[in-house]
Amino acid sequence: MLKDFKEFILKGNAISLAVGVLIGVAFGKVVTAITEGLINPLINLLGGSPEISLKLGVFDIGLVLNALIGLLITGAILFFVFVKPMNRLQKKEAVAPTVDPPPSKEEILLAEIRDAIIARDAVSGKERI
Image 1 (cartoon, rainbow, N blue to C red):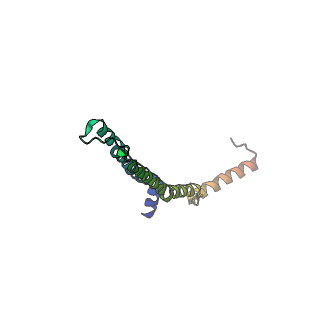
Image 2 (spheres, helix red, strand yellow):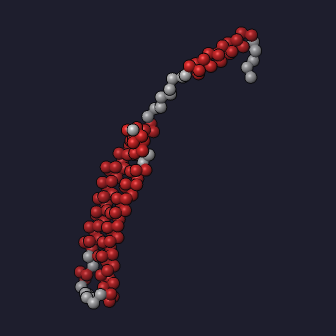
């Protein structure tokens, strides 16, 4: 059961999906911050709200910057904690030498028969095709 779980995790599907969801959430926060911090105040300036403010401080740039910094921090954490170690594990798994199973009794017997036929043909002078 652990071997199956290891294969599932090393395929990368689970990690890719988790990273995608978390980056999506962080990016959603950026979109929300841009909407609330820049777009809504601009609409309010153009008459979308009865409270029109002409101050330069109407745009909430700090909200957008916080969301962008949060996205970068989330991305860096996901990359260094999940993606990089998974890539390292996948490389180890790919580089790990595969050990061939020992030959079965039938394979050993067939190899002995093959060698005997080759030896017999060599003594009698027959050519192999």
